[in-house]
Image (cartoon, rainbow, N blue to C red; front, top):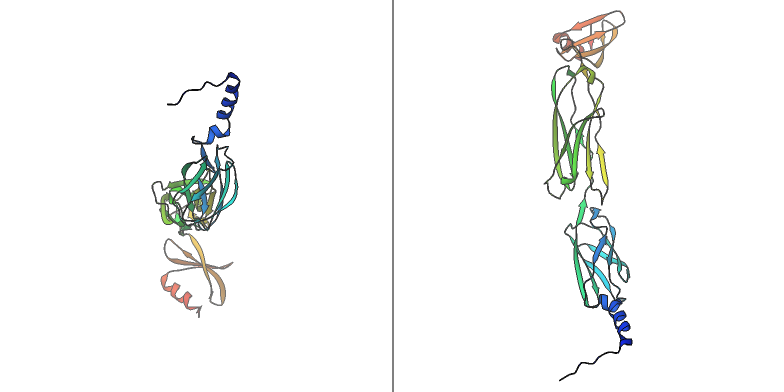
Length: 276
């Protein structure tokens, strides 16, 4: 049967120092493990680096990661490992690990793969009369994750509508938004645009793509035709500029001294070329 031995008083400080040093704090004890950044955000097919850190004083400590994507260790120092992912296409979480004093800790790190949205497609808007309702239509393709996407319709600087897609999947998709407006005389000449914003902050970029603008054409008096230039014709040997009256489907042709108001029968003659 063994017997207890009493250490001399002078040995106690050395024993406490031994237990509080790197051997006592790392061997067989738990330690903290984290990554910088906390969430990994990368464009589909791209690459990124992350740093794995551990509160470990074991000089033999080491770490790495497990993932379906291509990877490599950039540098490995006690308590710090720099890793790289490249040609990233698989969006499942990355598992990192670190071994310190014979004990291994693991952490799952969220990985977000994004696709930059294509340029939004805003449907054309025909000439409108004041008070006439119209539905603006916009489509956005290629964005991912769609749940991070917001689509805004604007008239000038004013936001007419903003729609987000919380709960949508992580893969790229095509979304459509619409907004009903009533044309007003003061809208004439203003631009309508559609903006797609993919916000991946604070760990990733905030990307914004805007459509080609559509210019509103609004006539103040609904009873008067809106004149749209369509062709140049020759009437009685005189060259004239002809415009189409949208309200009535009538051509209006003017010279400096003459004005011809031609209804549908005359319209066919104009499209034929020359009237003799």
